[in-house]
Image (cartoon, rainbow, N blue to C red; front, side, top):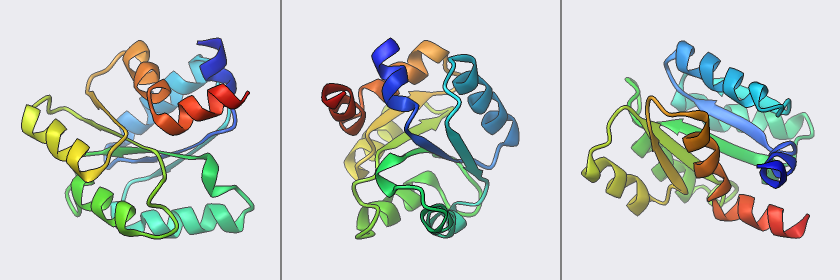
Length: 146
C-alpha cells in the first residue's frame, strides 16, 4: 500500500457521519496507517457544502477532497446527499466512498446508481477500507501520475 499511502497523503478526507464513534475510529485507522493528512468531519449532511466551502476558503484544493459518506443518517440520508453532490457543478466529480451497516444488495446498487465510487459495509477492516479507497478512479489516476 506504499503507493496508495503516498497518494492519500495529499487527500483531504471529509467524513459525513452522525456517529461520532465511527468518525473517531475511522480517523484513528487512517492515522495508524501513517496518513497524517487533513481529516475533517461533519455530523450534519445538510452542512456539507458549507464545510467544503470553508475548506476551499482556507486554500485547500477541491481536487484533494475524498468524501466518506454514511448511508444512514437521521436528517438526510447519504443517498440524498450523494444526489446533491452529483448535481452540484463544483463537486459532481468528487470521489465518494459510501459506507453502511447494511450490506443489502439494493442499498449497494442504489449507491452505485447514484454515482458513488465505492461502498464498504460496517464494521470494516483497515484492509477493506483502504482497498475501497485505492479502487476509486481518481485515486488510481493520482497513483499513476506519481
